[in-house]
Structure formats: C-alpha cells, structure tokens
Length: 458
Figure 1 (tube, rainbow, N blue to C red):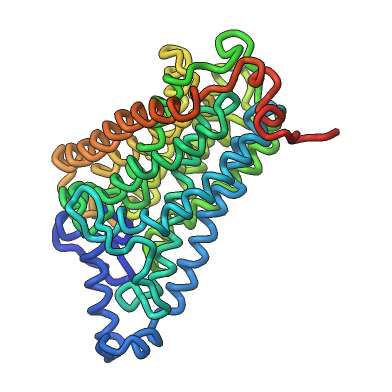
Figure 2: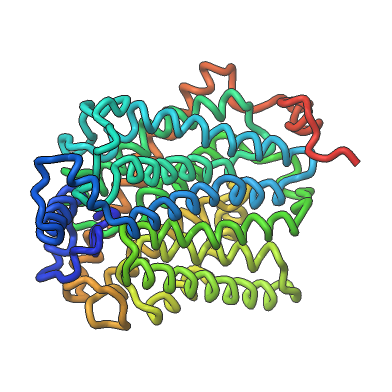
C-alpha cells in the first residue's frame, strides 16, 4: 500500500473495507481528480483552467515536506553518521552521503520515477516516463498539485534509502565502490520494491500490503542490504577488542535532531495533503520517537550504569523508523506501544548482530532500520485497526490475516534485498578490484587516503 493510500489528496476520508482502504496511487489519483472536478465545477479538458485550481495549501505543504525529507539526508543523516565514526573518517562519510544524494537524483529523473511509480506489469514500472519527457508546467496530480512536486517528493525517498546503507560500511570501503554499489542498488532493489508496494499495479499493493511511508520500501530494504554488505565486507580493524567510540557525540545529537524534524515531512508528507491525516501522522511520529528514546536510555542505563547521549538519540531513530509504515493508521496510544517496542527490540538487536552474529554493521543500520521497519509493518496489523486506540485506522479485523499479508511484504522485500545485494557486491568488487580499501589506507583514515582532505584542521 502506497503513500496517499488513506487520505490521498485529502479525499479518501472513508473506507468501506480493508481492500478499499488499501488503494494504489492510481486509484487515489482518480478519486482526487473526480473531487477536483466536483469542487471546482470544471472539467479537466482545459489544462490552463485546471492548473488554476491546484490546491495551494496542499502544494505548499508538499513542497515543505520535500525540503524536510531532503534535510534528513543533507545534512541530518550525514552529521549523525559523521559523528559516530573516528575523526579521521568523518569527511568520507559526509562525502558518501552527499554524493549518493546527487547520484540518486539523476537516476530518479532519468529512469527511477518511471520504473518505480508508472503503470507496469506489477513487478516493475514502464518506460514511458523515462527522462520525464511528459512533464510540463501543467502536469498535475489529479488536479491536486503539480506533478513536479510529487516527483521531487518521491525523489527524496530514493535519496535517503541508499544513504542509510552508508552506516554499514563506514571507515573501510572504497569510494568508487560506494558509487557503483549505490547506483546498482537503486536499480535492482529500491525501484522494484517501490513499484511492488506503491506502484500503480504493484503486486504487493494489490495484495493489500500496507506501508504508509516506507517501513518496507525504505527501512526493510536498507536494513537487509546493510547486514548483507557488512557481512561480505568484513569488520573494521579493532572491531572485536579495540574499537574506538564515536569521535563527536555532539555532532551525532545535532544530526539526529535534524532527522527528527525532517521525519515530519517523511511521514506527515506521505498523507499527500495539508489535512488531519498529516497532523495525526506528525503527532504519532513524535510520540514514537520520544517513547523509544526513553526506553532505549533506561535499558542502557540499567545495563551499563550510565545513560548515554548516543544511546538516547539512537533510540529516537529506532522509534522513527518503526512508526514510519504505521504513521498513517495508528493513533497516539498505538504510537506509544510502537515506540516502546522499538526501543526495546532494536536495542537488543544491536547487541545480537554485533555480539552473537559477529557482523560489523558499524552504525546499526540493520538493527535500527531493518528491525524497526519490519516491526512497525507487522504491528500495524493489530494497532492500526479502525476504532482501536484511535488514529485513522483500517477497516479490517485484528486477526492473523492482515499480519500474514504484512509479513509476506516484508519477506519479499528482504529476500530481494539480500540476493540483489550479494550479486551487486560481487559485481562492484570485480569492477573496482575489491570493494575494501587497503589496510594502510584504513589505518590512515579515508579522509586522507580516499579524498586527500581532513575533516578537522586544528
């Protein structure tokens, strides 16, 4: 189920059944188009007349939400990740996040938008919107706001998803490998899964999988790929016995705070309109983040004897990732439960992946985003039921049926992510003579060895 599925363009206010609630984007656009004609009294044969009836409030909100989501990556995620690494690698992390944002933008406008969101065969979108040759100033989303706004809003999701994976391979990967891997990953994983869930004929969307803002499309794919890549790449030097702590927790907190603010655009923007659904999505997003932060802090306090800044902000990110798929359906109490679950489960997932599995998922992408995104996707089957704990709600019974549907969506996305990532890493390694830097370069730090610059000159 895609963005816009519950109150798309402010028109789908009521649902008669779970299936009706789980609309594809195309169905929602049609409803919005009909409402626009009824509201304005104008037919849409004249593009000039229709353009005059764009809902200025919705347009303004979606433009703002777009800026907020981009703000999550640049500079939010870059600073969050940058503060977590050693000082000799901070610039390399900033460079990786920035470059991925540029690369994803070009891929999105050339082929990504069409492959992800245009009408296709249920598995991948068509080619008719390659290079956006169809786009004009009058192109709109069913009379609600310009299509250009929709395109760039969705672009920001394509930007942040591969940037999340950076946290799995920091301090030891070649920059050329980052570029090649990220481009191939968008083509092989993000665009197909986006089409499965949010595309006009996506097979998971048609199977009634609910993913309001990206628990599957963004977080599950990034988390599964991060774990796979980290396992293939191998751990950092000193991982088992001499790993240095984050060099700048203050930078971590600043970046995390930017993520928190930007996430309002991520989740509330996915309502597609400036309405009550956007307001509810913003509210539950905030509640989940705050709850997960405190739960994580108290667990860490109990286990280590001291509450840490890095811990509490990591819990916040876990709460945000976990509420993402459910932010359009749950109410405040549902968000409280989701946040508490995220803080608890993601905390112990970090320990399990690094301690038990021995995988150096350096900045806990799999534990925070992968586990969190899947957890939220599954919990909404029970917490998002209409009339239970408030919120927009979905009209289905809290049985295992919707849970099974949600689990199928998660499993499909994770399976593709793992297999495709394995293949992409092999291809990337062949093209770059191995994806890992030399031991000497790793010791020197990637700022100097890869980019010839220093993050700090004191």
